[in-house]
Length: 271
Image (tube, rainbow, N blue to C red; front, side):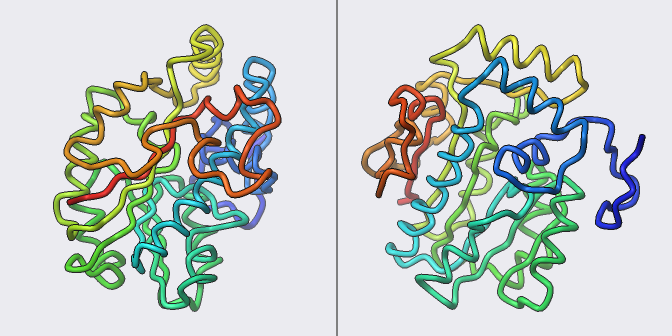
């Protein structure tokens, strides 16, 4: 039966699982539907570490934003931002720099609708409903032109995004296209699921998503993820497991050390 809650935008397909809503569910959010929850629970039986991994990803986001703020960045473009939940980019950034500006981009209608409600009255943040593969449309949008000054460094965020871009859509070219107009000193923070561990489990999970008409991720090796960065220079400690990128405390890492390495993470600088 279709979901009829009043926060659901008209035309949203609630019968097909959606990555942004599954992620919201794993993080403890409530902007998801029954099909998202049952799919998430099914995937978790195949990948029992997945819920912990997305929480490590969220913790890395906070560390990356704080690192960018420390480097002097005051404007952020969050690609594939997902559904707003605890610890959003503008909240993290403004604890350190109250003047920080943020544009969130996502193609998921529920994410955009909830973002618009959350950011109502905030003239230093905006949410853009767009497919990140439309680079010209994103960078030329009214929201980006109002809040992002391309003559100054930008913090570009691609959290658990690039593995949804298949090779035929040229993810390396996408990274390059977003970086080209940015000022030197701009930083890219990203996470990407790995094909270097649990390959059989990932294959089973991908088949499960396909069977439920959901999007299927494109896992990549360490070298393949490095290849997406082009001429960008990784800052220390380089491309490492999500929980191993400058952890600041016990909440940034998993109890099982192996779980810290299941998602690659890095921050790269434009020279």
